[in-house]
Length: 182
Image (cartoon, rainbow, N blue to C red; front, side, top):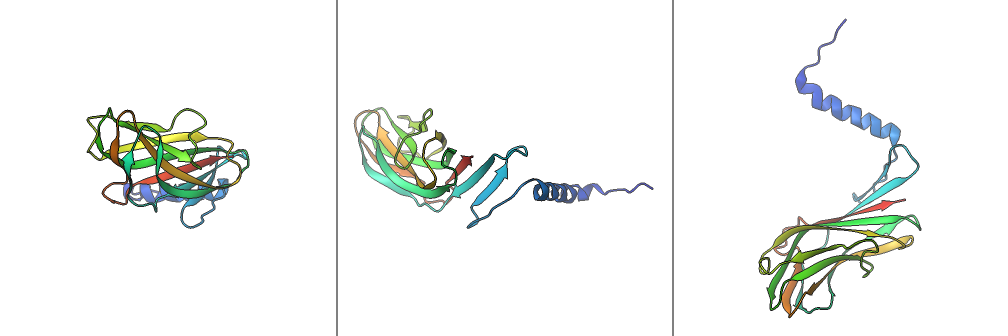
């Protein structure tokens, strides 16, 4: 006997199938609606995801050629002492004025720059005065288990600048995703 399945039920069947797979293949930990643990391909290694989205629009009134902190964006807990962390900021930034050739914004953890590569984005002279949509990602190692803080820093490349801001306009759309690879 053949059973006909109406095509309008495909999404529900797919969702149910995925839900069953997840319940057998992984352990999920939800804490404060922000953390989930996902095993990688059935191996004992896992990834912990933390979403930081409760920071507000903040700016640094005066910007020089030396990096300065705009704001702490939030904290996360690293579980493994030798884990690798990937932090990615998705959002908007602004440099209101610049007497030089633009600026750089840098994502940091515990006030320290990425240990592998760079976690920066430029603001060109044509971007100055405009809200710029960006993503910045960085890899961080040797942090150790415990609580760590993600922050945004800025500097101008030459001259001076004003109002280097994170989440300008206060639209509540900016966020940071932190991935811990154990």
